[in-house]
Image (tube, rainbow, N blue to C red; front, side):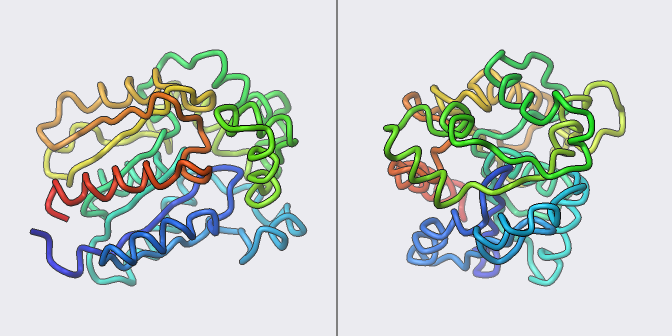
Length: 267
């Protein structure tokens, strides 16, 4: 069984969602005996509304900047935490785990790491929101309500989609999307994860069967990249869930799977 210090949990959000979207998870994990927190990305303000008003404050940050940001936060703990990340937060969680900064990680429908070759058309459609204009690499990029519906909330009702958009959607830096798109062209890509690390802690990767932003094919390909490591890599699919699986009305199912998995793995 892991010691008490290892029950610290850091939640890492992805693009277009505010850190406060993790609040129900923080409460649930706190009730389960963990010490959770959900710090925002660099440049993000304390609230959704403030982040929307100061959109350009998030511009220009890349994957490496975000990893370094969370690494500094983790250093203040004095012990390696569990890291749970969604989308690009899932990519960040994998890097922190591979770099021995986390005790265990859960990557919920994670953005593709270097080595994932095939990107389904729906994933390209979502990424193109930023990629279609090269200037967006240095800009903040926002989703329209219709784009959020397509990329995040396609598996819930239109009413719930509108509510989620109003509550949690924020501008996001375009740079990580450009870095992920060119990851396989650069040996030193910030999206590169040491998937051969055999001494890292356990990893759980999930897939939403209806996810358009990170389709199951991406999560499956990610898991295959770890095949040369003897470290634990587990996979779980949620067949009827879209990319909003961490924030929509079905979030407790995903949270409880993560909690059960951590228990099984001694955390």
